[in-house]
Each structure stands twice: as structure tokens, then as C-alpha cells.
Image (cartoon, rainbow, N blue to C red; front, side, top):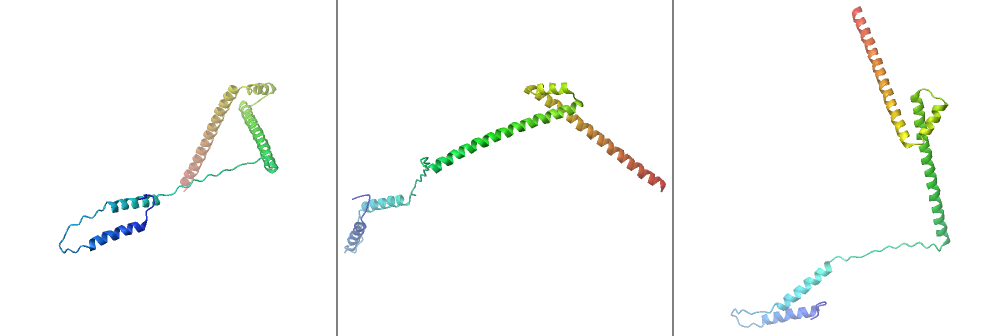
Length: 181
């Protein structure tokens, strides 16, 4: 018997044969008739295996392939233009970074000169030479930041003193008003 494909007619024929054997029983006494169920068990197992294979999900593989044919003049020209645009934009970004760095340096120089309080041609020349070395820039930056912190603290103290004086004046006015009543 072929296990891959099974004829349903053969299965029905086997069941009819079994049914006929049971019907032929003319004896009213109960006899134990042994029926050979091995064929049915084999067919049931085969049927279950076929059902399991049918129930298994089917895996479909998708492959997408994209090709660029530079043989076409439009595509080749588009690629060249894109590369040139990328290079141009990269150059523009580099120039902007350089100018931003220059602005930062100029800002730090201005804050340093403001910290010094006065300047002359010699101190500006010395400052320009110091900005040629990264260690000097770091030192100047630390000095300027400390100076600015001290200035902020001093401003806060002055404002605190002003507020305290205003509160004292207010309390004095309230005290004078209470005395006059």
C-alpha cells in the first residue's frame, strides 16, 4: 500500500468487509470474534500524519532585489549631481564649524579683556599669541569663568543688601506710623 496517497475506496471496502463478517454471525451465542484491527490502526496513523502535514504552516520566502543600472544617462547624471551636492554641503558645514569656533574664541577674548578692565596694543598681541596654544586657552577659560562667578556672587550680595535696606526702611516707616497713632 502506498503510504503517501491512500485510496478512500480501499478504506470503505475494509470497513464493509468487517461489517459483513459481523453480520454473518448466525450463532446467537456470544462468541468472541477477534477482529484484526492492525490494518485500521495503520490507516489511522497514516491519516493522522497526513493531517499533521497539512496543518503545518507554509513558509514563503520573499526576496527583494534592487539594482541600479548606471547605463542610463539619467540615473548616472542624478548620481553625479547627488555626490556633488553632498560634497558641497559637507564643505559648507565645515566652514560653519570653523566660523563658530572663531566666534567662541572671539567671545572668550572679549570676556578676558573685560576681566582685565583695560587693554593696550601689547596685551592684545600677547592674548593673540596665547590663543595659539590649547593649554593657554583652557587656562584663560578657567580664569574668565572664575571671574564671572565672583562677579555674579558680588552682584547677588549687593542685591541682597539692597533688599535688606528696603525691608529696614519699610519696617521703619511701619514703626513710625504705629508711633504716630
